[in-house]
Structure formats: structure tokens, C-alpha cells
Image 1 (cartoon, rainbow, N blue to C red):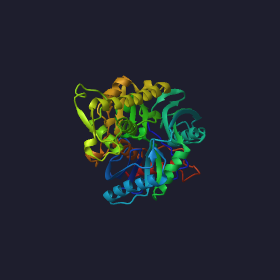
Image 2: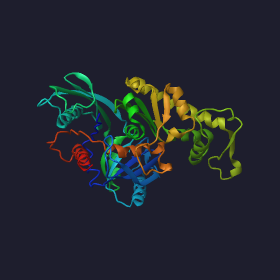
Image 3: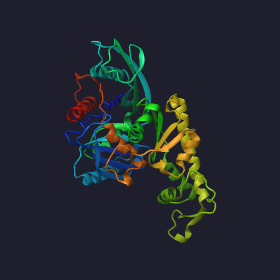
Image 4: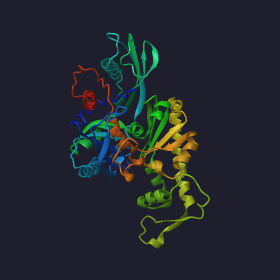
Length: 436
């Protein structure tokens, strides 16, 4: 099934690539770090709808001015974005203008819209699909929210359901269930303004679980059903994939930064030391040796190393485990309440920086009663070991997202709004087909 992504009409960007060996740029604006990947689309055979992509520039910076995926300080966020992008540009030796942006804030909301229409001429074409999806988007106008994705999840031809790709088939009526993902307009606009102040143009926005799924999941997982849990610094986002498409997404406002804050408060230690302890000694599961292993904990405001407190490792685990249990309980409740939990089957893929915490996978398997693995980017070349792990899944997935050949329907070929992201991504998809 072709997955379609429609940017909101408020995001007027230019095509991501302009030449045969064009470059594309991805910017992941997270609560703990901001990362930028610049990649080159290499001439070659397209496999599974994707051209070969090689990362040529990487930049990342500690996030500032971002809380729970939302901009709270425009100046600080702008500076952090500038530093990350500049580092990637220097490494790649190119200057970028357009970026595909990943975000975990704006309270993403999933809704499914079903539409049907008569088929002109009997044979179903790209333009028929485009008009149908455009009709679904036009009928979906959430108040105070912008549509980020319109993903066709299930086609039907003359009421025969389960059609994966109806193009070329004959029928009188074509139907589709479109998964609409929307975000709050205010946070989206603030993020766009921050990026524009860096002299960049937002070519598209993707929610983090969608991008992470595109980066980490194998084709069989997408087809059979899987839940992607992206554990970021300020939020934990959830995406459910089934039959090759994302059918549900949600976000929980708890992430790795909350664990760090709990440690800092519980042990009266500076945030920097709390983060270090979490990384070096933290675990989501207790072990028999925890009571015997002692950890030095520098105290807030104390400059004398002799004033450090000494605690057993079990105390650190006792702070981390309840917060992670709470996170997985909230994710489990959201999955059950959505009604889409059964589509994910018994498969869960954990990704994001916080998923690297020792014992997180085992605790997730126990809490969710599913088979769990930790996912990292699998579809890119040129990533170093330090930037090829779960913490960079969203940024890597944005490069894959930029290549999806969309049936954009702001949607028909005669769309009067030629500057809409729909028309631009459609032209980009056509460019890929013509040149490769």
C-alpha cells in the first residue's frame, strides 16, 4: 500500500530535492537533543519505493527552549537548531534551505475518515485516488488543529474490502479509510517560526512515531502488525502499524527527562550528575548485587568531593523503575482505549534515547505482555555507530519519509493551489520515478 502524507496547508515549503543527485535534510526537534541529518539521493534502482540514500552530514546539539516537544523559548530553541544544522552543513559541505521536520509535541491526534466516490471511466487511476483522499481531507477540518498526515489505511472497490492497491483495477465505486493525524496549530506554528528564523523552510512535518517506524521496522512487521514506542526526552509517542500503514498514533507527556528529574530531586544532586548516574548505573530492573554496590552522589551546592553522599545502587533503581512502569502503563491504557491494540498483535519495537536504559526492554515486555525488541535505523548508509542507534531513529526515518511517493490530493492534477505541499511532494515523487 502506498502511504500518503499531506502536510498542512499552513506549511508552504519547496520541494526537498531538485536534482538527480539532490540532497535532502531532516531535522528532529526533540526535548533532549536536536539532530540534523543531510543525505544525498544516489542515482540507482529504486527498491520498495525508496532510492538509495547516503548520509553525508550529521549534527546534533543539546536541546534548549523545548519542553515536551513544544517550543517554550524561541531564542534558545533557534540557537540550538542553528548549531545542529551548522554542524551538519559543515560536515556535508553543502548549504541546505529545506528541511523535513520531526516533532513529538503538539498533542498528535488520530482519526479515521471513510469516503467513497464513483470512478470515472471504470479503470482506477492515480488521479482517482488523489481526488478521493483530497475529498477526505477537505471533509476533515479539526478546530484549532492542522492535518499532518493523511494515510490511506484500507481501500475498497465496489464494497470489496481489503484491497492493497486499487490502481489499474476496474469498478464503479472506490472507497478508502484515511488515517488523519493532526496536531495543535499553535505549537506547530511556533516550531515553524523558530525554523524560519534560522533561514530554513519547512518542507514537511512528520510525527516522531511515524518517522521512527519508517526507520526501524522491517516490512513483515509493518504488514503483520506492530506497535512502535518512541521513548524521547520529554514525551513517549506511540504508533501502531498494520498492513503496511500507520493506523494509530498517540503521545504520553512523560520521557527520559522525567526520570532524570526524579533522580535529581530524590537524591538532591545536580541534573548533570543525575543524567550521568542514569546512564552509567541506572536500570529498570533490580539485581541481587544492587544493595552491595555503592554510588557516589554529589550534592547540590556542595563543591567539596568529600561531601558526596554514598547510596546503594538499589536506591537509584527504586527511583527509575516506578517512573518507567508508569510510562508503560499509560501507553498500554492508550492502546487499549484506542481499539487498535489488537492490530499490533504481540509485537512491540522500542526506540528513542530512553529505550537504551538498562532493563527497559524487559520491563516493557512484562508490563505490556508482548514480545519487545529495541529498534534502530536500518535503511540508511553513512551513519556512524554513535549516530546509528535508537536515539536517532526519528531523524533517520524523516529521510525515508521524504521519499514516499505520495498521492497528494490536495489532490488532483488540476489543484489550483499549486504551492501546496501536496503538489510539491507529488512533483518530487514523479521526479523520482522519471529519473530512476
